[in-house]
Image 1 (cartoon, one colour):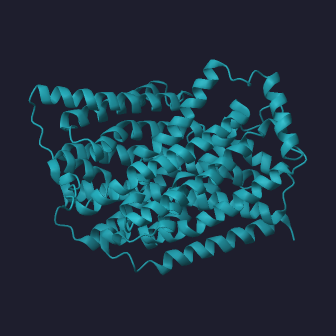
Image 2 (cartoon, rainbow, N blue to C red; image 1 turned 135 degrees about the horizontal axis):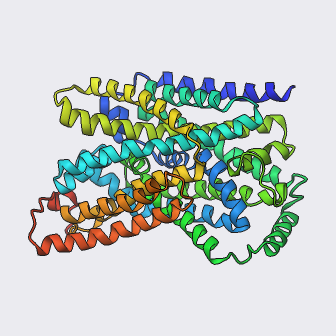
Length: 498
Protein backbone atom coordinates (compact mmCIF):
# COMPACT_ATOMS: atom_id res chain seq x y z
CA UNK A 1 0.00 0.00 0.00
CA UNK A 2 1.19 3.52 -0.80
CA UNK A 3 3.07 5.23 2.05
CA UNK A 4 0.92 8.35 2.15
CA UNK A 5 -2.31 6.35 1.97
CA UNK A 6 -1.23 4.06 4.83
CA UNK A 7 -0.33 7.02 7.04
CA UNK A 8 -3.59 8.85 6.32
CA UNK A 9 -5.64 5.73 7.07
CA UNK A 10 -3.97 5.37 10.48
CA UNK A 11 -4.52 9.06 11.25
CA UNK A 12 -8.13 8.82 10.06
CA UNK A 13 -8.87 5.90 12.38
CA UNK A 14 -7.44 7.87 15.29
CA UNK A 15 -9.43 11.00 14.40
CA UNK A 16 -12.72 9.08 14.20
CA UNK A 17 -12.02 7.45 17.56
CA UNK A 18 -11.29 10.77 19.26
CA UNK A 19 -14.39 12.36 17.75
CA UNK A 20 -16.42 9.45 19.07
CA UNK A 21 -15.10 10.04 22.59
CA UNK A 22 -15.99 13.72 22.37
CA UNK A 23 -19.53 12.96 21.18
CA UNK A 24 -20.01 10.17 23.74
CA UNK A 25 -19.22 12.50 26.64
CA UNK A 26 -20.81 15.62 25.15
CA UNK A 27 -23.84 15.21 27.42
CA UNK A 28 -21.98 14.17 30.54
CA UNK A 29 -20.42 17.50 31.48
CA UNK A 30 -22.95 18.24 34.20
CA UNK A 31 -22.35 22.00 34.34
CA UNK A 32 -19.14 23.77 35.26
CA UNK A 33 -17.99 21.29 37.90
CA UNK A 34 -18.32 18.40 35.50
CA UNK A 35 -16.69 20.36 32.70
CA UNK A 36 -13.63 21.32 34.78
CA UNK A 37 -13.04 18.65 37.45
CA UNK A 38 -15.26 15.82 36.26
CA UNK A 39 -17.02 15.21 39.57
CA UNK A 40 -13.67 14.47 41.31
CA UNK A 41 -13.99 10.74 40.67
CA UNK A 42 -10.98 9.95 38.45
CA UNK A 43 -9.04 6.76 39.12
CA UNK A 44 -5.28 6.21 39.15
CA UNK A 45 -4.78 5.09 35.55
CA UNK A 46 -6.84 7.89 34.04
CA UNK A 47 -5.30 10.58 36.28
CA UNK A 48 -1.72 9.39 35.79
CA UNK A 49 -1.95 8.98 32.02
CA UNK A 50 -3.76 12.31 31.73
CA UNK A 51 -0.89 13.91 33.69
CA UNK A 52 1.69 12.22 31.48
CA UNK A 53 0.05 13.06 28.17
CA UNK A 54 -0.34 16.68 29.28
CA UNK A 55 3.34 16.70 30.29
CA UNK A 56 4.90 15.21 27.17
CA UNK A 57 3.77 16.57 23.83
CA UNK A 58 5.39 17.05 20.45
CA UNK A 59 7.32 19.88 22.14
CA UNK A 60 9.30 17.25 24.05
CA UNK A 61 9.62 14.74 21.22
CA UNK A 62 10.47 17.27 18.52
CA UNK A 63 11.78 20.49 20.11
CA UNK A 64 13.46 19.44 23.34
CA UNK A 65 14.72 15.96 22.49
CA UNK A 66 16.11 17.08 19.13
CA UNK A 67 17.61 20.35 20.33
CA UNK A 68 19.04 18.84 23.51
CA UNK A 69 20.40 15.80 21.69
CA UNK A 70 22.16 18.00 19.16
CA UNK A 71 23.70 20.24 21.84
CA UNK A 72 24.55 17.69 24.54
CA UNK A 73 24.64 14.26 22.87
CA UNK A 74 23.95 11.37 25.22
CA UNK A 75 23.95 13.75 28.18
CA UNK A 76 20.47 14.85 27.08
CA UNK A 77 19.03 11.55 28.35
CA UNK A 78 19.52 12.99 31.85
CA UNK A 79 16.73 15.46 31.09
CA UNK A 80 14.29 12.61 30.44
CA UNK A 81 15.36 10.82 33.62
CA UNK A 82 14.97 14.06 35.57
CA UNK A 83 11.46 14.49 34.19
CA UNK A 84 10.57 11.02 35.47
CA UNK A 85 12.16 11.35 38.92
CA UNK A 86 11.49 15.02 39.73
CA UNK A 87 8.68 15.97 37.37
CA UNK A 88 6.58 12.85 37.96
CA UNK A 89 7.59 10.77 41.00
CA UNK A 90 8.54 13.60 43.37
CA UNK A 91 5.78 15.89 42.12
CA UNK A 92 3.10 13.30 42.86
CA UNK A 93 4.61 12.45 46.25
CA UNK A 94 4.74 16.09 47.36
CA UNK A 95 1.76 17.71 45.64
CA UNK A 96 -0.91 15.22 44.58
CA UNK A 97 -2.63 14.14 47.78
CA UNK A 98 -2.33 17.49 49.58
CA UNK A 99 -3.70 19.33 46.53
CA UNK A 100 -6.51 16.81 46.10
CA UNK A 101 -7.53 17.13 49.74
CA UNK A 102 -7.40 20.93 49.91
CA UNK A 103 -9.22 21.57 46.64
CA UNK A 104 -11.95 19.07 47.49
CA UNK A 105 -12.53 20.39 51.02
CA UNK A 106 -12.41 24.06 50.00
CA UNK A 107 -14.35 23.49 46.74
CA UNK A 108 -11.49 24.89 44.64
CA UNK A 109 -11.60 24.39 40.87
CA UNK A 110 -8.60 26.47 39.72
CA UNK A 111 -5.24 27.79 40.87
CA UNK A 112 -6.46 31.43 41.10
CA UNK A 113 -9.24 30.25 43.44
CA UNK A 114 -6.65 28.49 45.59
CA UNK A 115 -4.65 31.71 45.97
CA UNK A 116 -7.75 33.78 46.68
CA UNK A 117 -9.04 31.41 49.38
CA UNK A 118 -5.63 30.92 50.99
CA UNK A 119 -4.69 34.61 51.11
CA UNK A 120 -8.17 36.21 51.02
CA UNK A 121 -7.01 38.30 48.07
CA UNK A 122 -9.28 38.91 45.03
CA UNK A 123 -6.41 40.87 43.46
CA UNK A 124 -4.18 37.81 43.59
CA UNK A 125 -6.89 35.75 41.90
CA UNK A 126 -7.21 38.35 39.14
CA UNK A 127 -3.43 38.63 38.61
CA UNK A 128 -2.95 34.87 38.39
CA UNK A 129 -5.94 34.55 36.07
CA UNK A 130 -4.48 37.01 33.57
CA UNK A 131 -0.97 35.52 33.72
CA UNK A 132 -2.29 32.00 33.17
CA UNK A 133 -4.44 32.90 30.18
CA UNK A 134 -1.90 35.14 28.44
CA UNK A 135 1.23 33.05 28.95
CA UNK A 136 -0.27 29.63 28.30
CA UNK A 137 -0.86 30.82 24.73
CA UNK A 138 2.84 30.63 23.68
CA UNK A 139 3.07 27.17 25.28
CA UNK A 140 0.05 26.10 23.26
CA UNK A 141 1.64 27.63 20.16
CA UNK A 142 4.87 25.70 20.73
CA UNK A 143 2.87 22.46 20.67
CA UNK A 144 1.48 23.41 17.25
CA UNK A 145 4.97 24.13 15.95
CA UNK A 146 6.32 20.82 17.23
CA UNK A 147 3.67 18.75 15.52
CA UNK A 148 3.57 20.69 12.27
CA UNK A 149 7.30 20.28 11.69
CA UNK A 150 7.01 16.49 11.65
CA UNK A 151 3.79 16.51 9.60
CA UNK A 152 5.32 18.78 6.97
CA UNK A 153 8.36 16.50 6.61
CA UNK A 154 6.59 13.13 6.56
CA UNK A 155 3.29 14.05 4.93
CA UNK A 156 4.61 16.85 2.77
CA UNK A 157 1.74 19.21 3.53
CA UNK A 158 1.86 22.89 4.39
CA UNK A 159 2.62 23.71 8.04
CA UNK A 160 -0.36 26.05 8.34
CA UNK A 161 -2.72 23.33 7.11
CA UNK A 162 -1.28 21.04 9.81
CA UNK A 163 -1.90 23.70 12.46
CA UNK A 164 -5.50 24.15 11.39
CA UNK A 165 -6.16 20.38 11.50
CA UNK A 166 -4.68 20.06 15.02
CA UNK A 167 -6.58 23.13 16.22
CA UNK A 168 -9.88 21.68 15.02
CA UNK A 169 -9.16 18.29 16.63
CA UNK A 170 -8.35 19.70 20.07
CA UNK A 171 -11.20 22.23 19.93
CA UNK A 172 -13.77 19.57 19.05
CA UNK A 173 -12.66 17.28 21.85
CA UNK A 174 -12.88 20.08 24.42
CA UNK A 175 -15.99 21.86 23.22
CA UNK A 176 -17.93 18.62 22.94
CA UNK A 177 -16.89 16.88 26.12
CA UNK A 178 -14.80 18.98 28.50
CA UNK A 179 -12.78 17.46 31.34
CA UNK A 180 -14.20 13.93 31.27
CA UNK A 181 -13.76 13.64 27.51
CA UNK A 182 -10.13 14.78 27.75
CA UNK A 183 -9.47 12.31 30.58
CA UNK A 184 -10.91 9.40 28.61
CA UNK A 185 -9.04 10.48 25.49
CA UNK A 186 -5.81 10.85 27.47
CA UNK A 187 -6.25 7.33 28.85
CA UNK A 188 -6.31 5.91 25.32
CA UNK A 189 -3.64 8.26 24.04
CA UNK A 190 -1.35 7.33 26.93
CA UNK A 191 -1.28 3.71 25.78
CA UNK A 192 -0.75 4.83 22.17
CA UNK A 193 2.23 6.87 23.32
CA UNK A 194 3.80 4.01 25.29
CA UNK A 195 3.42 1.54 22.42
CA UNK A 196 4.62 4.06 19.85
CA UNK A 197 7.70 5.14 21.82
CA UNK A 198 8.72 1.54 22.49
CA UNK A 199 8.47 0.64 18.81
CA UNK A 200 10.24 3.86 17.82
CA UNK A 201 13.20 3.22 20.13
CA UNK A 202 13.68 -0.30 18.79
CA UNK A 203 13.48 0.65 15.12
CA UNK A 204 15.64 3.77 15.38
CA UNK A 205 18.31 1.77 17.21
CA UNK A 206 18.15 -0.88 14.46
CA UNK A 207 18.28 1.70 11.65
CA UNK A 208 21.36 1.72 9.35
CA UNK A 209 22.48 5.09 10.76
CA UNK A 210 22.66 3.73 14.33
CA UNK A 211 23.50 0.08 13.65
CA UNK A 212 22.36 -1.41 16.94
CA UNK A 213 22.50 -0.30 20.56
CA UNK A 214 26.14 -1.04 21.36
CA UNK A 215 27.42 0.35 18.05
CA UNK A 216 25.23 3.44 18.34
CA UNK A 217 26.38 4.22 21.88
CA UNK A 218 30.01 3.61 20.98
CA UNK A 219 29.81 5.85 17.89
CA UNK A 220 28.09 8.61 19.85
CA UNK A 221 30.71 8.45 22.61
CA UNK A 222 33.46 8.76 20.00
CA UNK A 223 31.67 11.73 18.43
CA UNK A 224 31.22 13.43 21.79
CA UNK A 225 34.89 12.96 22.72
CA UNK A 226 36.04 14.42 19.43
CA UNK A 227 33.66 17.42 19.64
CA UNK A 228 34.28 18.59 23.22
CA UNK A 229 31.05 17.09 24.60
CA UNK A 230 32.53 14.52 27.01
CA UNK A 231 32.65 16.10 29.49
CA UNK A 232 30.48 19.08 28.60
CA UNK A 233 32.11 22.51 28.82
CA UNK A 234 30.88 24.81 31.60
CA UNK A 235 28.35 26.88 29.61
CA UNK A 236 26.79 23.79 28.02
CA UNK A 237 26.61 22.05 31.39
CA UNK A 238 24.76 25.02 32.88
CA UNK A 239 22.34 25.05 29.94
CA UNK A 240 21.73 21.30 30.30
CA UNK A 241 21.08 21.55 34.05
CA UNK A 242 18.78 24.53 33.46
CA UNK A 243 16.76 22.55 30.92
CA UNK A 244 16.56 19.58 33.29
CA UNK A 245 15.40 21.71 36.23
CA UNK A 246 12.92 23.77 34.22
CA UNK A 247 11.27 20.81 32.50
CA UNK A 248 11.17 18.81 35.76
CA UNK A 249 10.30 21.31 38.50
CA UNK A 250 8.59 23.78 36.20
CA UNK A 251 5.62 21.42 35.94
CA UNK A 252 5.03 21.84 39.69
CA UNK A 253 3.75 25.36 39.11
CA UNK A 254 1.87 24.87 35.84
CA UNK A 255 -1.88 25.10 36.46
CA UNK A 256 -2.79 22.55 33.77
CA UNK A 257 -0.57 19.97 35.51
CA UNK A 258 -1.71 20.81 39.05
CA UNK A 259 -5.29 20.58 37.79
CA UNK A 260 -4.86 16.84 37.24
CA UNK A 261 -4.72 16.33 41.01
CA UNK A 262 -8.09 18.00 41.65
CA UNK A 263 -10.22 15.19 40.25
CA UNK A 264 -8.50 12.15 41.80
CA UNK A 265 -10.95 9.99 43.72
CA UNK A 266 -9.04 9.22 46.93
CA UNK A 267 -5.63 8.74 48.56
CA UNK A 268 -5.30 5.15 47.40
CA UNK A 269 -5.68 6.25 43.80
CA UNK A 270 -2.99 8.89 44.40
CA UNK A 271 -0.54 6.18 45.50
CA UNK A 272 -1.26 4.05 42.46
CA UNK A 273 -1.15 7.06 40.18
CA UNK A 274 2.32 7.97 41.48
CA UNK A 275 3.74 4.63 40.29
CA UNK A 276 1.93 4.71 36.93
CA UNK A 277 2.94 8.30 36.22
CA UNK A 278 6.61 7.58 36.99
CA UNK A 279 6.78 4.46 34.79
CA UNK A 280 5.07 6.35 31.96
CA UNK A 281 7.55 9.23 32.24
CA UNK A 282 10.57 6.89 32.32
CA UNK A 283 9.47 5.26 29.09
CA UNK A 284 8.16 8.25 27.19
CA UNK A 285 10.56 11.01 28.33
CA UNK A 286 13.59 8.76 28.70
CA UNK A 287 12.91 7.18 25.31
CA UNK A 288 12.20 10.48 23.61
CA UNK A 289 15.44 12.12 24.76
CA UNK A 290 17.41 8.97 23.95
CA UNK A 291 16.20 9.11 20.35
CA UNK A 292 17.15 12.78 20.12
CA UNK A 293 20.59 12.06 21.58
CA UNK A 294 21.45 10.03 18.46
CA UNK A 295 20.86 12.91 16.03
CA UNK A 296 24.55 13.36 15.14
CA UNK A 297 24.65 9.76 13.85
CA UNK A 298 22.13 10.83 11.21
CA UNK A 299 23.48 14.27 10.27
CA UNK A 300 27.09 14.41 11.47
CA UNK A 301 28.15 18.00 12.11
CA UNK A 302 25.77 19.58 9.59
CA UNK A 303 22.53 21.01 10.94
CA UNK A 304 19.73 20.03 8.53
CA UNK A 305 17.66 22.65 6.75
CA UNK A 306 14.93 24.00 9.03
CA UNK A 307 17.09 23.98 12.17
CA UNK A 308 16.68 22.04 15.41
CA UNK A 309 12.90 21.80 15.08
CA UNK A 310 13.37 19.50 12.07
CA UNK A 311 16.05 17.17 13.50
CA UNK A 312 13.75 14.45 14.81
CA UNK A 313 11.24 14.63 11.90
CA UNK A 314 14.08 14.18 9.41
CA UNK A 315 15.54 11.35 11.53
CA UNK A 316 12.22 9.52 11.38
CA UNK A 317 11.89 10.14 7.67
CA UNK A 318 15.37 8.79 6.90
CA UNK A 319 15.43 5.83 9.30
CA UNK A 320 13.66 3.48 6.88
CA UNK A 321 10.72 2.82 9.19
CA UNK A 322 7.74 0.77 7.94
CA UNK A 323 4.83 2.83 6.59
CA UNK A 324 2.45 1.51 9.23
CA UNK A 325 4.84 2.47 12.03
CA UNK A 326 5.31 5.95 10.59
CA UNK A 327 1.53 6.32 10.76
CA UNK A 328 1.54 5.09 14.36
CA UNK A 329 4.33 7.53 15.25
CA UNK A 330 2.39 10.40 13.76
CA UNK A 331 -0.64 9.33 15.77
CA UNK A 332 1.64 9.17 18.82
CA UNK A 333 2.73 12.76 18.25
CA UNK A 334 -0.80 13.91 17.46
CA UNK A 335 -2.07 12.15 20.60
CA UNK A 336 0.55 13.76 22.80
CA UNK A 337 -0.07 17.17 21.29
CA UNK A 338 -3.87 17.10 21.36
CA UNK A 339 -3.77 15.96 25.00
CA UNK A 340 -1.45 18.79 25.95
CA UNK A 341 -3.41 21.35 23.94
CA UNK A 342 -6.67 20.22 25.54
CA UNK A 343 -5.24 20.51 29.05
CA UNK A 344 -3.73 23.92 28.38
CA UNK A 345 -6.88 25.26 26.73
CA UNK A 346 -9.25 23.94 29.39
CA UNK A 347 -7.13 25.35 32.20
CA UNK A 348 -6.71 28.80 30.63
CA UNK A 349 -10.33 29.22 29.57
CA UNK A 350 -12.04 27.81 32.67
CA UNK A 351 -9.83 30.15 34.69
CA UNK A 352 -11.09 33.17 32.75
CA UNK A 353 -14.74 32.15 32.90
CA UNK A 354 -14.77 31.21 36.59
CA UNK A 355 -12.25 33.64 38.05
CA UNK A 356 -12.76 36.70 35.88
CA UNK A 357 -16.21 36.70 34.25
CA UNK A 358 -18.26 35.09 37.02
CA UNK A 359 -16.45 36.86 39.84
CA UNK A 360 -16.12 40.34 38.36
CA UNK A 361 -18.39 40.81 35.35
CA UNK A 362 -21.49 38.59 35.53
CA UNK A 363 -21.78 37.34 39.08
CA UNK A 364 -25.27 35.85 38.58
CA UNK A 365 -24.44 33.74 35.53
CA UNK A 366 -25.73 30.20 36.03
CA UNK A 367 -23.60 27.08 35.90
CA UNK A 368 -24.68 25.83 32.46
CA UNK A 369 -24.17 29.22 30.82
CA UNK A 370 -20.74 29.44 32.44
CA UNK A 371 -19.81 26.08 30.92
CA UNK A 372 -21.06 27.31 27.53
CA UNK A 373 -18.94 30.46 27.88
CA UNK A 374 -15.92 28.30 28.67
CA UNK A 375 -16.44 26.36 25.46
CA UNK A 376 -16.54 29.60 23.47
CA UNK A 377 -13.34 30.78 25.17
CA UNK A 378 -11.71 27.46 24.25
CA UNK A 379 -12.37 28.21 20.59
CA UNK A 380 -10.91 31.71 20.96
CA UNK A 381 -7.83 30.37 22.74
CA UNK A 382 -7.19 27.84 19.99
CA UNK A 383 -7.39 30.58 17.35
CA UNK A 384 -4.97 32.83 19.28
CA UNK A 385 -2.53 29.95 19.68
CA UNK A 386 -2.63 29.34 15.94
CA UNK A 387 -1.62 32.94 15.18
CA UNK A 388 1.19 32.94 17.79
CA UNK A 389 2.47 29.64 16.36
CA UNK A 390 3.21 31.42 13.10
CA UNK A 391 5.69 33.70 14.89
CA UNK A 392 9.25 32.61 13.92
CA UNK A 393 10.43 31.55 17.39
CA UNK A 394 11.99 28.08 17.90
CA UNK A 395 9.89 25.57 19.85
CA UNK A 396 12.27 25.25 22.79
CA UNK A 397 12.47 29.00 23.40
CA UNK A 398 8.74 29.57 23.01
CA UNK A 399 7.93 26.90 25.59
CA UNK A 400 10.61 28.04 28.03
CA UNK A 401 9.19 31.59 28.09
CA UNK A 402 5.77 30.23 29.01
CA UNK A 403 6.99 27.76 31.65
CA UNK A 404 9.42 30.24 33.15
CA UNK A 405 6.89 33.04 33.55
CA UNK A 406 4.06 30.88 34.88
CA UNK A 407 6.07 28.59 37.17
CA UNK A 408 8.25 31.50 38.25
CA UNK A 409 5.11 33.29 39.37
CA UNK A 410 3.17 30.45 40.99
CA UNK A 411 5.32 27.48 42.02
CA UNK A 412 6.68 28.94 45.24
CA UNK A 413 3.45 30.45 46.65
CA UNK A 414 1.48 27.35 45.63
CA UNK A 415 3.85 24.82 47.19
CA UNK A 416 4.43 26.87 50.33
CA UNK A 417 0.68 27.42 50.72
CA UNK A 418 0.17 23.67 50.96
CA UNK A 419 2.72 23.12 53.72
CA UNK A 420 3.70 26.35 55.47
CA UNK A 421 1.21 28.27 57.56
CA UNK A 422 3.72 31.10 57.89
CA UNK A 423 3.40 32.31 54.32
CA UNK A 424 1.19 35.40 54.24
CA UNK A 425 -0.25 37.75 51.64
CA UNK A 426 2.83 39.98 51.52
CA UNK A 427 5.12 37.02 50.97
CA UNK A 428 2.90 35.49 48.30
CA UNK A 429 2.68 38.77 46.38
CA UNK A 430 6.46 39.27 46.64
CA UNK A 431 7.09 35.76 45.31
CA UNK A 432 4.58 36.07 42.47
CA UNK A 433 5.72 39.46 41.22
CA UNK A 434 9.42 38.77 41.71
CA UNK A 435 9.27 35.45 39.86
CA UNK A 436 7.17 36.95 37.08
CA UNK A 437 9.56 39.85 36.47
CA UNK A 438 12.68 37.66 36.66
CA UNK A 439 11.39 35.47 33.82
CA UNK A 440 9.47 38.05 31.81
CA UNK A 441 11.87 40.98 31.58
CA UNK A 442 14.85 39.19 29.94
CA UNK A 443 12.54 37.53 27.42
CA UNK A 444 10.68 40.76 26.60
CA UNK A 445 13.83 42.89 26.38
CA UNK A 446 15.31 40.42 23.88
CA UNK A 447 12.16 40.55 21.75
CA UNK A 448 11.46 36.96 22.86
CA UNK A 449 14.57 35.72 21.06
CA UNK A 450 16.94 34.90 23.95
CA UNK A 451 18.14 31.26 23.92
CA UNK A 452 18.58 31.36 27.72
CA UNK A 453 14.89 30.90 28.56
CA UNK A 454 15.45 27.75 30.69
CA UNK A 455 18.11 29.54 32.77
CA UNK A 456 15.83 32.52 33.44
CA UNK A 457 13.01 30.11 34.30
CA UNK A 458 15.16 28.44 36.96
CA UNK A 459 16.27 31.81 38.33
CA UNK A 460 12.64 32.95 38.48
CA UNK A 461 11.59 29.90 40.51
CA UNK A 462 14.50 30.34 42.91
CA UNK A 463 13.94 34.10 43.32
CA UNK A 464 10.24 33.51 43.96
CA UNK A 465 10.97 31.13 46.85
CA UNK A 466 13.39 33.57 48.45
CA UNK A 467 10.94 36.45 48.14
CA UNK A 468 8.07 34.39 49.55
CA UNK A 469 10.09 33.72 52.69
CA UNK A 470 11.54 37.23 52.98
CA UNK A 471 8.22 38.92 52.22
CA UNK A 472 6.33 36.81 54.74
CA UNK A 473 8.82 37.57 57.49
CA UNK A 474 8.88 41.29 56.62
CA UNK A 475 5.09 41.47 56.44
CA UNK A 476 4.75 39.84 59.86
CA UNK A 477 7.43 42.07 61.39
CA UNK A 478 5.84 45.24 60.00
CA UNK A 479 2.38 44.03 61.05
CA UNK A 480 0.92 44.61 57.59
CA UNK A 481 -2.70 43.49 57.00
CA UNK A 482 -2.46 39.74 56.44
CA UNK A 483 -5.91 38.20 56.19
CA UNK A 484 -5.56 34.51 55.38
CA UNK A 485 -7.70 31.40 55.44
CA UNK A 486 -5.77 30.33 58.53
CA UNK A 487 -6.17 26.81 59.83
CA UNK A 488 -9.27 26.24 57.66
CA UNK A 489 -6.96 25.73 54.68
CA UNK A 490 -5.05 22.87 56.27
CA UNK A 491 -6.21 19.37 57.22
CA UNK A 492 -6.87 18.90 60.90
CA UNK A 493 -4.44 16.65 62.72
CA UNK A 494 -6.03 13.39 63.74
CA UNK A 495 -6.13 12.82 67.49
CA UNK A 496 -4.37 9.71 68.65
CA UNK A 497 -6.54 7.23 70.48
CA UNK A 498 -5.60 6.64 74.08
